[in-house]
Length: 162
Image 1 (cartoon, helix red, strand yellow):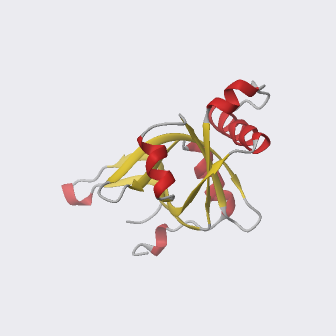
Image 2 (cartoon, helix red, strand yellow):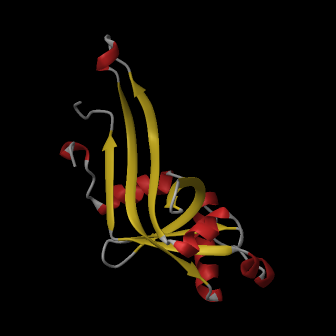
């Protein structure tokens, strides 16, 4: 990493950043083109500092077809955006926080795990926990699990030097 002073390794700070960001961008490769889609997500921290993302979508479509052929992905999240103004154009900068990681998507078929994933997703997106999921709807949606052991979190925050 070129800017070591911007790397975030503290798990509490990583979780604080993740808790604020509601949209993840999933990058896939179909053999000819890169395809990136924004997705809502839920997440949890694993026992070994891995981040487990859960994503959902329709059971059919370009994304699902690509991932069935090649489950390797890159995920990117960013937030805390604010322009840092300065007197000269090249002295301007930007405050941000971001995560970039790589992994392989797994399709989740187990009803209990799908329900857990959807509960995490709804908690992250709405802040509410007590959801009742109809079996019909759980079975109608595609749920994907992405476990990241290889990821980088960076931030440029107010008070940091350029």
